Amino acid sequence: MLAQPKRKYINPRYGQAVIGPPGSGKSTYCHRMHSFLSRLDRKVCVINLDPANENMTYTAEINIMNLITVEDVMSHLGLGPNGALMYCLEYLEANIEWLLKNLEALPYDYFILDCPGQVELYTHHKSISRIFERLQSCSYHLCAVQLIDSHYCSDPAKFISTLLMSLNSMLLMGLPHVNLLSKADLLKQFESKLLYNLEFYTDVLDLSYLLEALDDAPGMRKYKKLNAAIISMVEDYALVSFQPLDVHRDESLLRVKNLVDKANGYIYGAGEERSINSLLACAVGAESHQAKIEKDINPYVRNPL
Image (cartoon, rainbow, N blue to C red; front, top):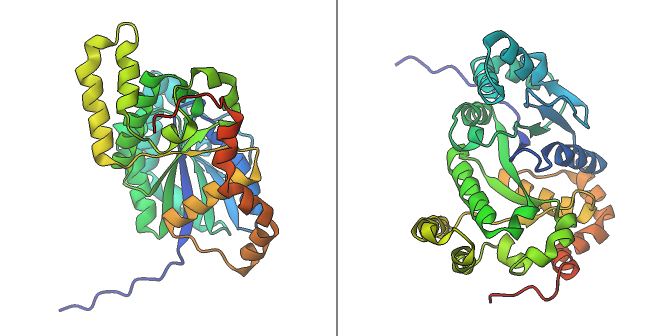
């Protein structure tokens, strides 16, 4: 039997694949998390994988728009925005060596991947999941960070839709997954529309309460069986839960960082540990951050428990 060639050892690298619907705050999160991790002395950079992202608030070390853009595809192939975006991701998949070569040349060991906002890419289309599979096979330990705008909590139908979307993307992506309710600092603006307390939405508790609210909504009673089936499926998988995120607060970013590090197996060194110790007050605040948000919103919101 011929001897197998020795595989070259590659030091593991880590990263976050930031996904979510348009307007959920992905680019802002990437910018804020990059700044926060840099303050902790982590060697981190942001990679833009959105071929339509022309208004970045950060400096991308690798930018897919240097390879292909949605605008060029629409112009040359006559596709619409959605079709052009899918084509761009398929093109990146076919030219994955371009991405791997550029990643290998960077002096970083932690990457934040700013991904496109088209939901179908994470629920039905396979290119981006295959891209992540290839990265993982090359010793990149990734965690998917999915952002959902917290205002969806104010509408039972929209919240159930986000639960179904989150579950679908978790199953298709096949990565360790952290779901975030972004813009938690704005919850107070629509507190009067929240049926229950924040814990109900973050822990995804007994969804039969939302089903009751849906049945009482105009025009929704005819979908009662469909809504019940969707809720039953989400509860049977028992995978979806959320962490509230306020990108303007260090304690919120610290809590998310801890969740992501646990999910992708990242272990920080002594230098970062000293930096974290200097943020000890934030760590204490992170433990009670969710309670602080609940206190800020309407104290008279119903608690189903």
